[in-house]
Length: 162
Picture 1 (cartoon, rainbow, N blue to C red):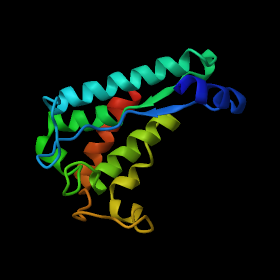
Picture 2: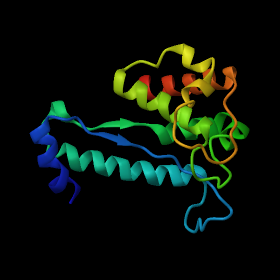
Picture 3: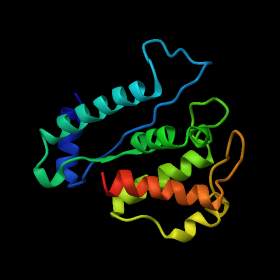
Picture 4: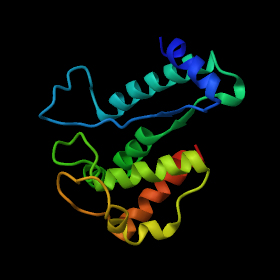
């Protein structure tokens, strides 16, 4: 269904699809039945991403092969390296992205689309990036400069170095 619905549209426009590997989460308030761990949950998500990529690649020319924005892999990297910082990636529901998570997401997506990280000045005053954004929900804690540089490093490793 995915290939049949989007394949012709993508072929006609010449667009290269970007598949977002979304992040896993862990919440005591959410039914997590069948999801053994954050790592297992992320592996299931990535399996789905690979199915999307294969389905679209089967109907598109090679130059239009889907690109994966490895957001979930970035979150998982933070989870494995800095578990306390991983918790800051979410608002109070432990499911949706906080400002920390949005900054990491933005760095990974930017690196995926442009082949390099955004200007490093984005890490010095993250709050300015959100000054004109949508209404922010949850705890409003901006990443420190060192946290922002860490997120940029994670984005570099997962999006640019694979």
